[in-house]
Image (cartoon, rainbow, N blue to C red; front, side, top):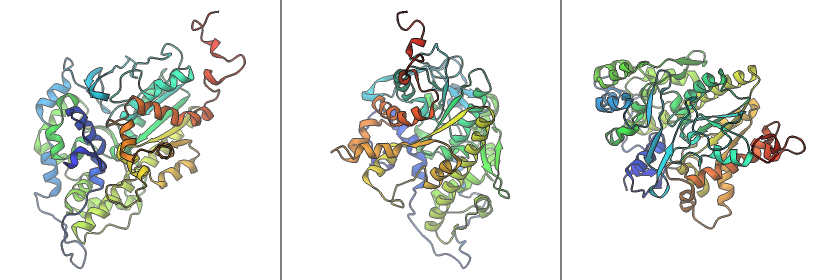
Length: 463
């Protein structure tokens, strides 16, 4: 079976092109981070035999293969085109209304967005809202229709509205920036939820996520799903380790066409340390060790090893993962400071790809082939020590799986079609329900006693 048709090692037998596209996007970083060396070479005394300083090195090769097709950009910028995303100068893109054949059992899904930016609400949307949610496609509710997201399941159960500002493909940093924008307006809410999925930490540090996609993926990416153009992103200062924020390198619609120019792409990103890390993980070759060592210095990482292609892939993989998570910590620190200074409360949800749930249910040990610990203990401990309430939902999956007689793959297929299916969103809503009830003050109307009952909803019940 083609590795591109697997999710972190979980076989996928879906027959729809769009489903295959979604499975690729949700497992792409896992494939890079879990890359295995296929050859090794003898190292010199300095362990630098894999260092390549030629003009046509592994980084330039990666960049030249990642030039954007002009036709896809034309379609993306056409306001009349039936495409998934639309341009934004900070985040790169936001979403358009869509009706796509990507749902459960081969169905179409309907996703609509209000003029105020959140996904169309089905339950209590006309009432004042005190809960806003942010994140990527597992917040957005990709591959399910309006009303089938976990927010709408909870809204129906709580008897109060929950707004959904999730955008597929966003990283932690991009979701954080959108949160800051929304919460500074009259759309803000006293309770904010940040949902961090899979490789969201890794997306935060990408200047352009498109450049992280492999050639096979780029060749097959449907034009209707074009996105991942340059956006604002975050890194760490190599000297201080402080968070450093960067603007989008293509901040106008016209400037995206620069990404169709091979020389522009090479000149703009040839010194990008994260691109150097991706190239090293894929090829086992190091084009410029200074780029990687700047990343390592920012987090005091001392395990880079250039002895062989095996050791390059392994050590840079660990560097990249630890660096991305450390950036995520810095972002959440800033978010915590923001909500505290604005009288708001923060709750963090940790969600997982299908493959991650499959491995945890199987009991796969850390370090095993294809196993990626997307939310490592270091990050969970950081949240605990910072006093930020959170739920790591893989624990909820494992707890439920232990009550089943099915194997791990059958259990995962119950809930995932790339993203959560409607049943998966229902599971997620009830997996986090009790912790949210303990966090919310006052509790939702469905759980209140006395005078603060659902009777407060004028017009919903007879007077």
